[in-house]
Image 1 (cartoon, rainbow, N blue to C red):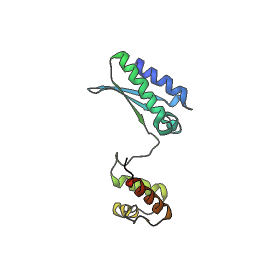
Image 2: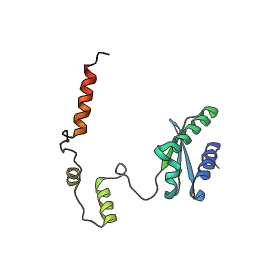
Image 3: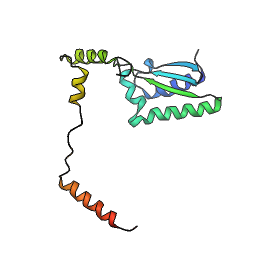
Image 4: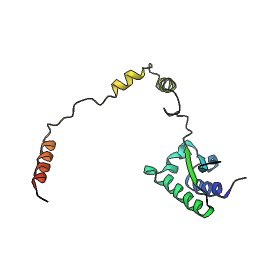
Length: 145
């Protein structure tokens, strides 16, 4: 039996997504409040989150309003269920194995990956734009405001 909060979020999300049959919401109550875990079709994940997370934030705001009415604290967790395992949820060996099998490339060690993505290259400070900007900033520093 689903509660009013589950029905509320389910109604809104099903109106937004392209695969409404794949929407599922789990409800867990703990000492922090009520946690609603939303799972949608991987193709609809972008629609639920929205640009820069605006849609997800709107869902959370509506839940907060419902929580004010019901004297409860709600949290919404949107689950990414497209088969990707985030690095935080698994060990680095699992991630390297998954990446290598997906790309059919030889495996590399973590140390090699860190060296390849290093940002220790010197910054080019000799461009005309940089010199012009620094000159303008120097003039602004001389002003007594």
